[in-house]
Amino acid sequence: MSVSFLSLSLAGLFYLLLHTVVTIHILLFKEDVKSAIGWIGLVWMAPIAGSIVYILFGINRIHRKALVLSTRRPIKKLIEKLNTKTLSSLSPSFLQFLKLGYHVHPQNFSLGNTVIPFENGDDAYPAMCQLICRAKHYVWLQSYIFNDDIAGQSFVSALEHAASKGVQIKVLVDGVGLNYSSPNILSALKKIAQVETSVFLPSKHLINLPFVNLRNHRKILIVDGTHAFFGGMNIAAGNLLKTEPKEPIQDVTFQVSGPVVEQISCVFEEDWAFSTQTTFTRTAVRHTQNGSVAARIIPDGPDSNYGKLPLLFIGALNSAQQKVQIVTPYFLPEEDILSALEVAAMRGIRVEIILPQKNNIWGMDRAMRANFVRLLTRGVKIYRTAPPFDHSKLFLIDDEWVCIGSANWDVRSLKLNFECVMECLNEDLAARVATIIEHKKQKARQENLSVLQQRPWYQKLLDNAFKLLTPYY
Image (cartoon, rainbow, N blue to C red; front, side, top):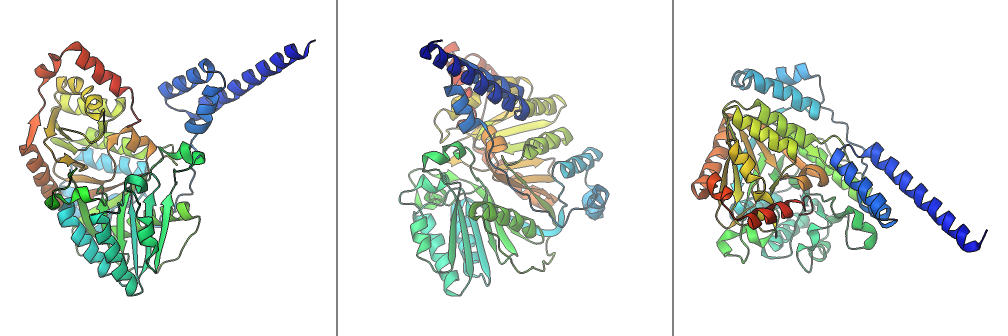
């Protein structure tokens, strides 16, 4: 047997063994049929390269030991804990949804919270910085984007003031979001004594490329364990609309106080422990119940195969009795959520989706528009808000249930990012959120089914082609 023939035989055996092992891994760990078929096709049609691509990008390497939340109780006690006034306002289907939500994420609602919306950085940033300056013990700040610009420097100044009083400060920034400004904010933060910084999955080096999709998209500010800001607003000059920035951004975030801050704190602690590989001990906080909002936190991310947020969203849509309102900058959900929206509309529920007229991501407008005709045909209402770009994330059901947080309605948020949302039950908060949404609708243009259907074939072709890029936006 010649050496060349032996080499070819060994190479063929290696090729067969490699692709067989990779295929077995795909079949064992990829639950989505389309995803599994796509990866298997790539592995066998692209010799060696397909397996390498899967090993680098297709395997979920993020594993974290979840915190054991001390507030977990049986579902019956969860329902009993909600006060009589709250329960009496909920329909039977919504009580079923609460049970579903508990099984999705077994965390009780906490009572007696205050949740106040702040629109745009002009209102939110001064309030956030004032809260930092009033800190007595510690400040924890977490953001996807924390730019070194006029907005970021206002936070740096507030952190300097807090540090001068001996306040302990921890700042966690995502490895991708950190690089939205050059220079990044780390050099400014590291000049401040008392400030610890960490970068979540740094992405500058080749070895970290497999994690470029695994972004920590959460935005959290916690002061002394009693007060917090929570939502989807980054720290960037574009949010300061009164300064007339080059790329202005509308957004909404929420100031939170009460027992639910403890749940928000658990999320930050877990992210910090994962990012730094260290843990820390904090003094227990006694929370006062000064508000009337029942709320709970639901984190989700690629370290879990459960997919909490898609299940939560579908459950909420199925429980709606009158109205569904969704505000999101990016709308590229998968088939299950699209179907749930259509079913809700066909049940006679008024389903409204509010999106930006002009997106800040190239190709996103076309990709989103690919789903419009099917939704409009089923009765879903779609509104497009005029500039400035609206980055708000709001989800309102029947003017009684509000979902706020960092998650968009796209595959990146619902499968690839570390996200966090807060469920809130309170009519007054729901009314305030409904007012914000109605104000956006008044300035929006409603999509017309006949106009979309009459568009040239090549425009529809482009829309569907860009949709294929999901989830790489």
